[in-house]
Image 1 (spheres, rainbow, N blue to C red):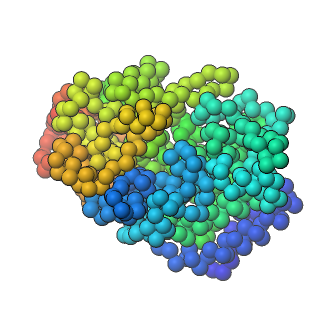
Image 2: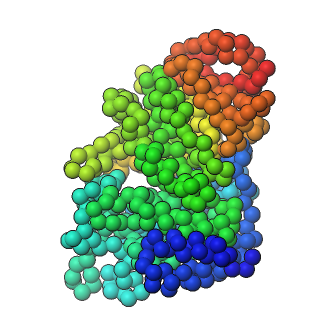
Amino acid sequence: MSGVSADRTETVRRHLGALYDDATVESVLPRVLELAERYRDTLAARDVAPNSQRTAFLITYGSSFTRDGEAPLRTLAYVLDEFGTEISDVHLLPMYPWTSDDGFAVVDHRRIDPALGTWDDVTAVGEGRGLMFDFVANHISSESEWFVRWLAGDARYADYFFEPGPEFDTSAVVRPRTTPLTHDYERPDGTFATAWTTFGPDQVDVHVGNPEVLLDLTDVLLGYLAAGASTVRLDAIGFLWKESGTTCLHLPGTHAVIKLWRVLIDDLMPRARLLTETNVPHRDNVSYFGNGHDEAHMVYQFALPPLVLHSFVAGDSSALTAWAAGLEPLPAGSTWFNFLASHDGVGMRPAKGLLAEADVEALVARVQAHGGLASFAGEPGGGRSVYELNTSYLDALAEPERVGDTAHEVGRALAAHAIMFAMAGVPAIYYHSLFGSHHDTAAVERTGIPRRINRATLDADELRDQLDSDPRRRGVYEGLAELLRRRGDFPAFAPDAPQQVLELGPEVFAVRRGEGADTVTVVVNVSGAAVTLEGVAGRDVLSGALTDALSLEADGFAWLVPS
C-alpha cells in the first residue's frame, strides 16, 4: 500500500479533531501523513514476533550491568547471551542523555547516552530478541534543547511547554508528587516564565495543545520503531493533556493522541506494540485499551504486585482471587503486561478499593521491617496517600524473622512469580528479581532517593561468580529460568488463552488456563503453612506426580494437567 488508506486517513482526521479546531486539523493532517510516509519503507521491512507463551520480558536499565572498559549496553548483551536464554524481549529503560530521575529527565529523545554506548550497541542487545524502548512523551529535561530554546524565545519552540495562566483551575489536579505543580524559570533576558512540572522542576511538561509538539513526538515514536523497537512504552502518558478544572489525568485528549499513534502503527508496522504506563486504579488503567483495537496493545497489570505481596504477607489470597476473577476478557490482539517488580516501587494506587487501609498499613510495616520505605503522593484538598513502597520485591516477600533463610527466600520468590507467570498476558521480570538481589539501602542513604533502593548496578563478572557461589542468587535465577522454559511448552499460557480463576480457599491462589484437554491449573500456596486440597486432581508437570488430593508445602505450587 502506498500512502495511508482513505479509511485510516479519516480516522487520523477524527483523532486530530479531538485535539484541535477544524482549521488546525486541515493544516496538520497532511503533515502527519507525510511524516508516516517517510518511515513507511523502513518500518515495512521490520519483522516482529507475535506474543506467545514463550514471550518473557526482562526490565533493565542500559547501565544495569557493567564491566571495566566495556560500554554497559555491550555488557548487557553479554549478560543476556549468557543468562537470558529464556528472555524473548528486553525492556530498555530510558537510554538517552538525561539530567535527573535516573533517565526520565530526557535531554534528547533521539540520542543514546554516550556513557551507555551507541545505537549499534542497542542493536547488539536486540540480536535475536525483541526490544522495548521507553518513550518519555509527557515531559523533557529542563536542560534539553527544546526547553532552553523555548526559554530563549526561539520561535520554533514557541508554545512547546505548558504555561497555565491565572485563570487555569488546578484545584482538582491529581499527580504523583508533593512538589509544586509549576516552577518559574529565568529567561536569558532576566524575565521569568512559568511551566507545568508534574514530576518536578527538572521534568517540564510539553504542550501537546501545540500541533508542532505532537508532530515532534510522533517523529520520535516512529523513529524508535525504525531504530529497532518492537514495543514502545509510553511513560507517564496519562498526564499528557491538560484542561482547566479537571484532574489533568486520563483526559480524552490523551486518549486521542494514543489512538492517533495506534492508527499510524497499524498502518506502517502492524505487529509493533504500544504499552501504556499508567500507575492508577484498575478502572482508569484499563481505559487505555480503548475498544480493544484502537489504543494500547498492552496495559500494565498494576494491581498485581501489591495484591500478590499482600497475599503472602497476610497468608490469604482472598483479595487477589476476587480481583483476578473479575478481570474482563480482552479482545484478540490486546493483552496484559504482568509484572511484580520494576525500576519504580510497588505502586499502591492501583490497590485502592481492593485492599483495606489496614492491609495497606501492614504492607508498609512489612517493607519498613526490611529497611524499605514508603513514598506518598498529594491528593486534591491537600491530603496525601501511600503512592508506592520502595523495596526489593523479593525482600518484602520474605518474613522479616527469616531473613537469611535461603530456602524460604527462594521458595517465596518462585511462588510469587508462579502466580505472575500463570496470569493471562505476558510476563516481565525485573533484573534484580531474576538474579535474586537484596535491596540497596546504602544507595538511599547516599543519595536520598528512595527508588535507588532497587536500582543497583551489577558487575557482570561478579554476578557470574555469584550465580555459582550465592545460594539465593542461584536458587532464584535457576528456578525462574526453569519455570519460563517449562511455561513455553504449554500453549495454555499463551497471552490470550482462556483464564478461569478458581476459589479453592484463602490459603491458595488458583487459576486454570487453556481449554479442553490442553488446560493447565496453577495452584500456589500463600498461607505460610502446608495445605491439602481434597478433590484437586491431576498430574503436576513440574514434579511428575499424580494426585487426587493436592498437598503443597508452604510456598509450594503445582501445575496440574488432566491425568
